[in-house]
Amino acid sequence: MNRHLNIQTSHGTLLGHLALPEHPRSLVLLPRIQPLAVDDPFAGNLFNRGHAVLTMEVISERERHFVDTPQDVSRLARRITDILDLIRRDGDMQELPLAIHASGDVTPAAIRVAALRDTQVSTLSCHGGLVDRAGLQALEMLVAPLLILIDDNDPAALASWQRAHRHVACPCAMHVLQTGENQEERVSGWFVEHARRLPGIPDSLT
Image 1 (cartoon, one colour):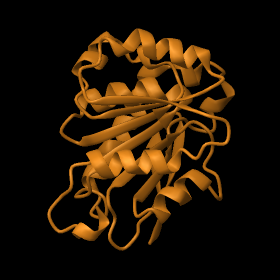
Image 2 (image 1 turned 90 degrees about the vertical axis):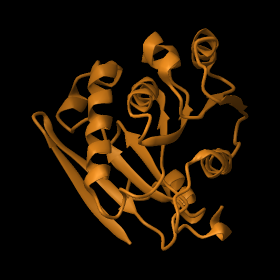
Image 3 (image 1 turned 180 degrees about the horizontal axis):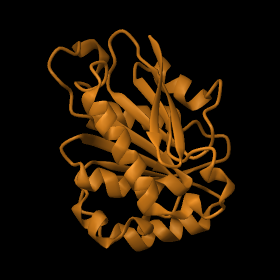
Image 4 (image 1 turned 135 degrees about the vertical axis):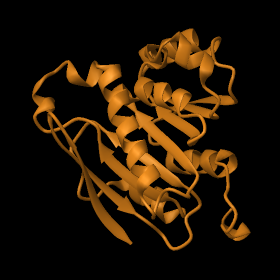
């Protein structure tokens, strides 16, 4: 099943797309700064591995004209929280174990939200971005298992993780991605291992 969703904000509309397989392992939220792609290979690969995938914008078309918007961690965190509220109210998504995969500038906001919504967010993975910008309180509060993926040519992300790591008490792992390495398999495996499985999901999918 495929559905289109949207969230209205004072700065414009945030667009989203839900792809729902018949027996999903989990719901994976992909918060995006860029406009939704017609064909998102990462989302498609997660869907093919049995995950429901909600791809959702976190800044509006109007906000993309301001270069500092993607660095506003508080704004992005509020938007992700709005999406989690939408998930809680939606009959197709509310019962699924929730995982978040964030990348780049969305990473610190996703960690902050996962720390605050610890009963809703089961697990989290992040690709790049400055982890320590989530803030000391969020890093110390985080309980959702955290996978950090860093490109081999991204020293800033690596240095940020090294600063943040000593403050993180949740189960975590870091992996440096080599050029051309497929990250979807690693992300899917992390989510399958750590997402809290609910009754009624067939064992064959775990």
